[in-house]
Amino acid sequence: MKQSIIYTLALITLGLGSCQKPFELDSPLTPSTEQSSSSSSLAYLKAADLDYSSKREVISVAQHGDDLSVFGDQQVYVYLSKPTTEDVRVSLALDRSEAALEAFVKGLTENPGYKIAEEGYAKLENTEVVIPKGQLKSSKPVLVKAGAKYAELSKATAGSEYRLIALRLDKVTEGVAAASKEHARLFLPVEKDYTNILMDQEAPKGSKVDVNLLDYEVSSAYTGYGKEALYDGTGDFWYASFGDQAPWFSATLQSGTRKFTGVRVSVLAGYFAIAREWTIYTTTDGETWNAQGVVQGYEINQKGDVTIHFVSPIVAKGIKLAATRRGQSGCAASDAKNTAASPMSCALPILPSG
Image 1 (cartoon, rainbow, N blue to C red):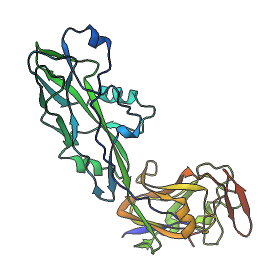
Image 2 (cartoon, rainbow, N blue to C red):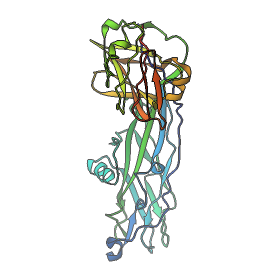
Image 3 (cartoon, rainbow, N blue to C red):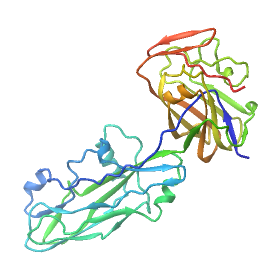
């Protein structure tokens, strides 16, 4: 039976779109010792000036529920350090080695979790290109396209992912030119943005999970307002403790997994402003949590009672809601017994599920 957990917190979905931007690869080869000391013309891939730490160099795809966007064809040209008197044939290949991944990650200021794209995720079309005599650029590009297993591999994980498509020089016409060693690879990082939630004020689909089958946990608790308020039906509030910079709460099945259709959440409308964004996570084992989407704090503050629906129902052991981006202004969270106001340490009122 499809079921839902009813919490005492309110959230909204963040719409998911796909942003597709082609790479700008037509840039000069950075001078190097290799280039200046070689008597041969060097075939190379222009990746020297790409900043992989910036989002502008990342191919973005999106998955909303079961709907998945596909990245556009990527054109990769091959270049020569100096013209030759004969045509030069160069072939490229996909590089799935750990060395390629290590070389890419080394250039990042922070690694969000890149992995080498699996076999079938991407494919090359027109792998061999020709650089005409007297020219410095191949007459046609090698095309990088989504492979036959792109959708299968992308949908295998219900969460955001980071894959690396790595290309390398494979063969160069012998006796006419040589392959560069310093510029023999090109990296195409792909980021999958995932969301599986929609929010409205309709009742959850399915039946409510018995609270006696769940274990509730919270990031912290203000004295006298513990996690029991999330489910004991007394009408009290759960408050995160003062100074809690990243409040969260979760409900986990004591045994097994179930198929969940959504989460019912309630707060005191007008008193919920500590976090700009909340992320909804699910887990199948109680340890690894996968993000299902992001909701906006101000929407929660306005509506009070909402249902967060999973676009594609999720088989899970538990659900967590965590503040992942704090607001800039303070908040005043209060009930009849307590009032708290502080720019960065504010109590969160969470109504019990009843």
